[in-house]
Structure formats: structure tokens, C-alpha cells
Length: 201
Image (tube, rainbow, N blue to C red):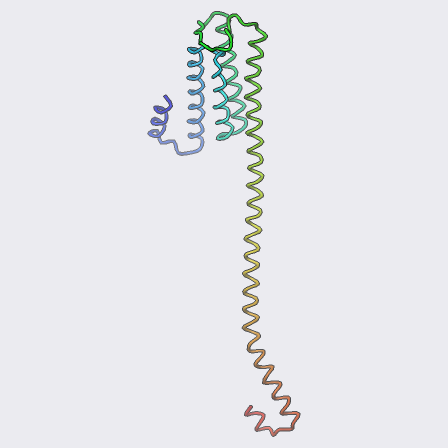
């Protein structure tokens, strides 16, 4: 189903950000629905793979936003709770699974509530961890940008220093020659050399 959706979305030509966001939202929604149906046919919430809802929450947190991840986690938990309640009330048949953690029809309500609460806490904790990691990455990225800016400024200052040293050298050479000639002229003047000899110098 996912491959068919990806092929369809490529042909539809969604290129702008809002259209792409709608496609991602639709894909996550379809995946959650398919996961819920698969869980229904394989033991329901008593299947340990019910934690697969965590995958979509992490994807939403990484690719979309923390707000989207909270929505996906709430939707996942609502689907799990709805599936558990419908099976427990007998409105949906229970498909037993070898190795299932419990039978949602006969288990104590406190155990079922605890299991679903644990699932909700795992989803919430995953969002908190991903949000903390993303915040740290954003901070490091800002720090890296600042360091890059400082490095560029240092390079500019070094270039200006090199240019100033070159200009100083270029100015210093003629000034040195002038100073040398002035020194010679001063000695000749002090020695009272004739004017025509001074002009020739």
C-alpha cells in the first residue's frame, strides 16, 4: 500500500511544501490505519508489536514537528484504546495470538488500563527525547553558524592585515630610498659641497 501511495504521489507532482505536508500526513494516517488493522488480525493490543505505533510518532517528530508528533501519538493511542475497548466489549472479534501478553476480553481492566497507559507514556517519552535531541541539534547548529561567522571575520581580518603589510612594504621601500638620499644630501650640505654637486646627486 505504501509503495502504491508513493508511486501515486510522484505522478501527482506535489512539489510545494503544503502539498508535501498533506502527502506526509495522509501517508502516516494510512500507515496507522493499516497497522491497527494488522494488530486487529494478530491479537490486538495484546500483541507486543503494538509498540510499532512508536515508529510513526518518531517519524512525525523528526520530519514534521513536535506538535505533529503529539497528534500522531494521541491518534495512535486512541486507535489502540478503541481497538482494545471494541474487542473487550465483544463488538469486534478477538483473534488470538500465540505468545500474546494477555487476552483483552478476560484480563482485569486495571491490567489493560496499565498496558495502554504504559504505551501512552512510551509515546510521550519518545517525543520528549526526540524534542530534546532536536533542540540540542538546533543549538549546535546555531553555535556552528556563529563559529563559521567568526572564522570568516578572522579570515577577513587576516586578509586586511596581509594587505596592510603589503602596502606598508610597498610604501616603505621608496621611503627608505628617500631617507637614504636625504641622509647623503645632509652630509654633503654639512661638508659644504657646491650646489651643482648637490643637484647632480
